[in-house]
Length: 263
Image (cartoon, rainbow, N blue to C red):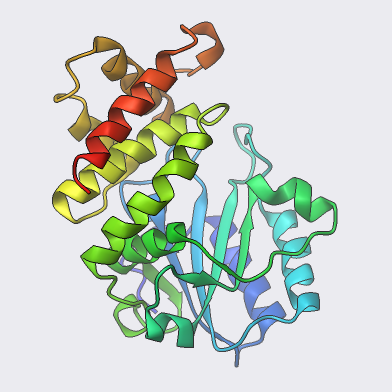
């Protein structure tokens, strides 16, 4: 365990108990807190990001139980002030991490964007995705252990080539999700740009801070990214319906162009 003086969110502490009870101490090898909670601090709408390492795939009934119990802890999106934060929980197998294949394989995932499926009785299945490679790369730089060994012992050192490949592979789906998720998409694009330039990961609002000075033309791109950044920090309301219809789309395309230049 390596908590590094980070404040442990209540949702993370409760999720740890659920994972230990559902998976059993012999299967759960480690649980890591990563994302905003350990890098930059939780913002008003930040999720609590957890990464679990196990030695075997959870049985279908175990996955169903995990979903049921995590839904009782996690706040519904969008979270109202004073309510529990949304949880994002990913479970990886130790042997998969050791093999370090691309794209990374996730054995189980919980996230609030899947709640409708969960409530319909759909249980998450193991699958691969370039996004998981990026999650592992970022967690490898920042995660702290809530139980089990420190990140250096279990999390892979993701090669920069895999990070670049994952960004390239994840970009089309990210752009496709722009409508209704403008803030997250614009900030994620800024972070992709930053990561390709520097080889490291920073919080989304810090990536936007870095990206804003070069975005002098067209000015609408900088305005859209600044709005997304301010909303992420809780300093503005980003009602994209009240802005010109193409504002977010133009900004996303310009940011994506900067990302593509670095492939």
